[in-house]
Structure formats: C-alpha cells, structure tokens
Image (cartoon, rainbow, N blue to C red; front, side, top):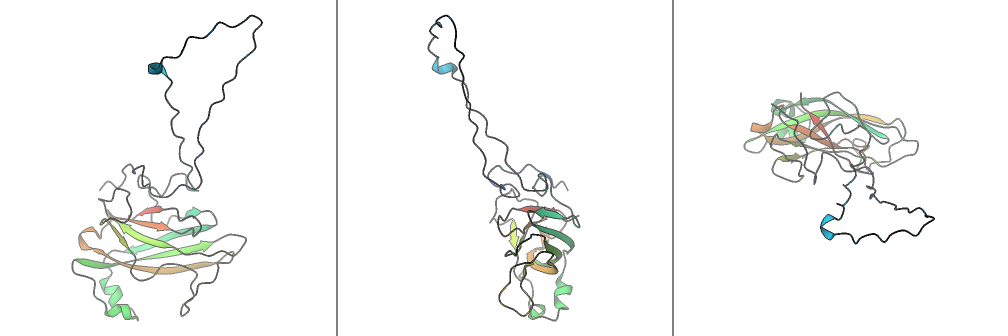
Amino acid sequence: MELRKAPRTTAVGRTFAGAVLALSALLTFSACAAPAKEAPAADAATAPASAPSPEPVWPKGEKEGTLANPYSLGEEMIDGDWSLVIDSVNLDANAEIKAMDSIISKVAPDAGKTWVTFTATWKYNGAEPAKGGTRFSVVNKNWDGTFGTDDEYGTTFNNVSTLPKGESKAPPAEKGFSITDKVILQMPVEHANTSSMIVASFNAADYNQFLVKLK
C-alpha cells in the first residue's frame, strides 16, 4: 500500500528547525550625466507580484522523516545531539503483553483494539548534559499530517528517556548515554498493519517530528 503522500503545509512530519527568513529586495540607481527622464507612473494593475515564500529550513535528515519520505525500521534518525533508531515492531502484541512480569500484563486492550509494541534505541551525543525524552505515536494510512486526530494513537504506558528504572525523576543525559527500551500502546486492530507509521520526536529542545514506516 502506498505510504508516500504529500504532507499538508500546515502540519508536516516535523517542525521547522529555525526561523524562516523573509525575502527583501534592494533597489539601486546609477547617477547619470544628463538629467533622467521622468518615469511614467506605475499602473496598479501591472504591479509586480510579491516574492514567493522561502523553502523551510529542515533539521538534519534532509527532509527524511516526513510523511512523503519516512525513515525505515533500523535506520538511524539524527536531530541535533540526539539520535534514535526504531529497532523492531510487534503489531499484534497481546500475547507479549500478557507474558510480561508487570501489572500491564493483566490489562486487556480496549474493545476493537490491540496492544502494539516497538523497541527503540535512543542516544545523546552532546558535549554538555541535557534533559531528554522521547514522544511516540502511531498514525494510520488515513492520517493527513494533522496531529491530535482520530487517525493518531499515542503511547499509553512508557516512553524512552533517561529515567532510571525504579526512579521518579530523570537526570540530564550525559555524552554517550544510550538506552534501548520498549514502547507500548493500543491502536485499532484494523490499522495495526504495515500501512501505519510511527511518529517520533526525540530532541527535547525542538521536538521535531520524524516518521518511520513499518516495513
């Protein structure tokens, strides 16, 4: 099933990395030896059109990770000092959840939904300690790039971060910090297939959006 479609201009796969510079024009005139003839008045109907908007400035990835050009499983995504890899996905994880040594093993998915899990490896490569965390969701094939719709499903259990197991406060990430963790969420059975995509934001400073296809 075709996954690549043009993202809407109001909500692309990720946010702009920096401010967009407005275009300006500088008009210069040369001095003449003889007096210049008076220029005719400009006709309002023939006034020049305004300059087009400049192209957006994307973070590292050269437009990869957008709705039209998603990353693949196992492919490293880089955003500033942070990187993320979605290692694997289980689109029918009910048995996996039930076998977990956790309270969630006793929780059945809502009617018409299934548990979905995916494993992610998250790294920090900055020189100075920084706060970090990652947000995930899954969007189905009907998603048009608008966040917070019925075609997007958010995490219901955990996200990859620097939070140590058994602790309630996450310390800043140090250079070289890496963690592999499992993300758990529910989504409708009808969309729990490879036509859906993962949306990840893993740079806590900017929260650019990266999309990952599930095949």
